[in-house]
Length: 418
Image (cartoon, rainbow, N blue to C red; front, top):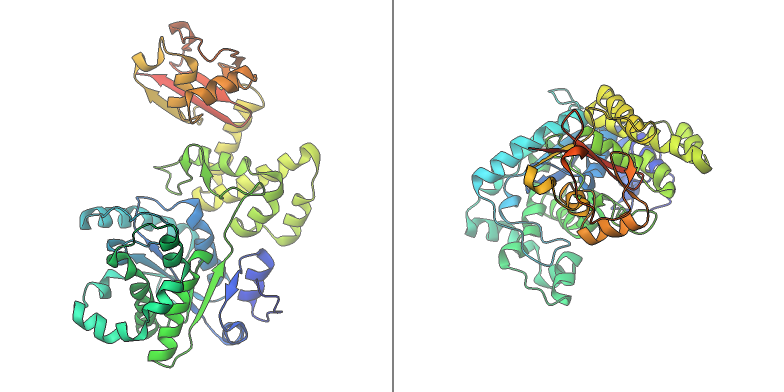
C-alpha cells in the first residue's frame, strides 16, 4: 500500500479505511479526483446467481467513489463470462449457456441498487454489459486492432498465467484471451463513458495494468488502476469462506439471519478492519468499538453485524436477525426468524444426530459432528448431546414441528421433518 499523503477525498477515504494495495500513477489520479468527477468501474462476471462477500469489497469501493463525488460504473461481464477468468484457478471455469448467463445477470443486478444510487445525473451509477461490444467484434478484427499491443512474453509473466503453468495445470487458449478482453473493456469504457479508473482485487493487478497501458498507448489518454489487498482473516484463512460454502449476498441464497451471523462470528482481530471496509460507521466510532476488550468485544461484533446487514438487507432485517440470534443463543428461545432446513422425515427420525447435523449444514462431516458432541458442543433442543450416534426420535420434534440443533456457540438451525 502506498504511503502517499493523498489530497482528494476519494483516495484519502480509501487509504484511511484500508482499501488500497496498489495504485498506478497515484499523484496523477489524486489530482484528477481532487479536481473533478472521476468515473471508475469494476467488472463482475456472471458466473453464479449471486455475488458473494468476496465481491463486496469491490462493491464498497464503488460506493466510496460515489460518496466522494465520483461516478461508479458497474460492468456485468456478459461477454467475459463466456470465456472465464483464469485468475486464481487451476481448472477452467464451467461453460455457461447464454440463457444461464442472462439468468445470472438478472439475479445479481439487484445487489448494486442497494449500495449505489443509479440514474442520469453526473455522479449517478450506471450498469453496462460488456457483451454489448465484445460480441460485436469479428475474430480477425479483434486480433488486428488489439493483438499487436500484447506480447506473449509479458502475458506469461502475469500471475494469472504464470502460477497456473508453474503448477503444470493446462490453460486453454480461450482463457489466455481473457486479459485482452478485459483490457479492451477499459478502452471501450474510456471512449464511450469517459471511464478513467479501473478497480479490483489484487489478483486482478496484471489485467488492470494491461488495460491502463492499452488506453494510454492507443488513445494517449489518462487511465488509472487501483487494487485492494487480498483479504484474509486474523487467523490467516480466506475471508468469506465457511464450512457451509460461500457467503452469498442475495437473500435467496443466504438468509439475512445467516448473513448477520457471519459478521457476528468475525474473529476478534478482524472487527475493526471489517468495520472500516464493509460499513459506513464513522472512523472514530470504529476506533472506540475495536478497542473493547474481553466479553465487551461481542458488542463490537454485534455492531459490525448490524451495520453490515443493514447496508445489504435493510435496518429492519438486521434488527430481526439480531433479535432472533439473541433469543436463540442468549435466552435459549425459538424464533421463526432462525434458519430452517426441511429434510425428509426418514432422513431425520431414526437417524443419528451427527448425520442430521451434517445434512443441516452445521458441520462438514459426520465425524466433525461426533467430535463436537464429545467435546460438549452439540445440542438438541438446548440439551447437550454427548454421543453423536444418538438417534433422533419422534418425541424430539416440538409442537411447532421442528427440532432445534446447535453446533458450538455460534451456529444454530431448525430442522423440519417433512
